[in-house]
Image (cartoon, rainbow, N blue to C red; front, side):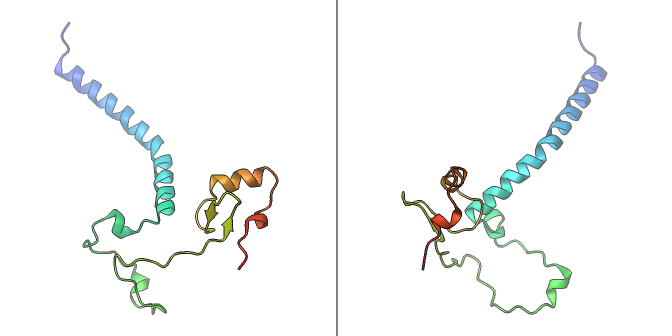
Length: 119
């Protein structure tokens, strides 16, 4: 039996509701993964969006004085010194999530001070 247009439109509306519900359920985990990737790779707004796009400025920040001169778009930051190192040569600057090698070592009973780089 052939379906009528009204039946097909009803089915489309039901499927769209299911798709919207699934999307709403997945959004928090997607946002979390994106935040982790941004932090891990040190991405900036310029990396994610066209650097020629106008940047939004918060209302209170327009009159605030800055103590440091603003970096030019695309300017490289100086490297961050290594703060933790293990015998295998793995390193971590102390920024971002703890690396797997450090988490595994800490869970085996070692202390984070065992890996601190002395200057």
